[in-house]
Length: 155
Image 1 (cartoon, rainbow, N blue to C red):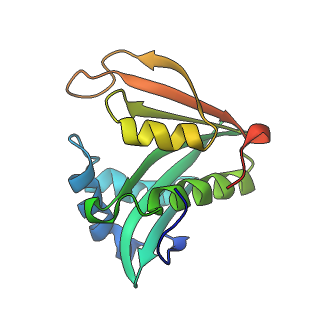
Image 2 (cartoon, rainbow, N blue to C red; image 1 turned 30 degrees about the vertical axis):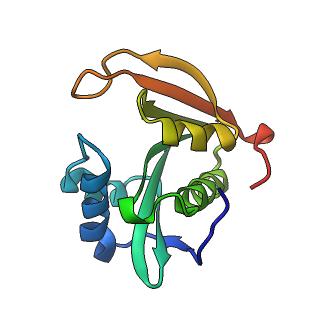
């Protein structure tokens, strides 16, 4: 979905951490702890937030693995702001940022049951390439998605 509202994407800062943790908790049944969300600031990562009306409504984290593999760690949007293009804007901005860090290929894991996220990734050109059994704390499998940067569709 293309943005239906004015979305500003910018680098995340420590001042955003509390809001990022709040979005994380409202989005996932097994959220990352605040300490881990903070640790990503100290890794070679792309850490961005989406703002609407000056308020952080979503975030995305990607890290570099090996020289050319960008691993999309997490993308989350405030439940009240979903289906308005925020996730699409975050995903494309995160891929751009990882490409600027040298990524040519991308990988992510997503809950098998998260059909909305799977649709977003498929629309962005990702292909499902396998499963990881029992990946999540509750035993749910993860679907593994990959994207080669040279086959990325138009944004």
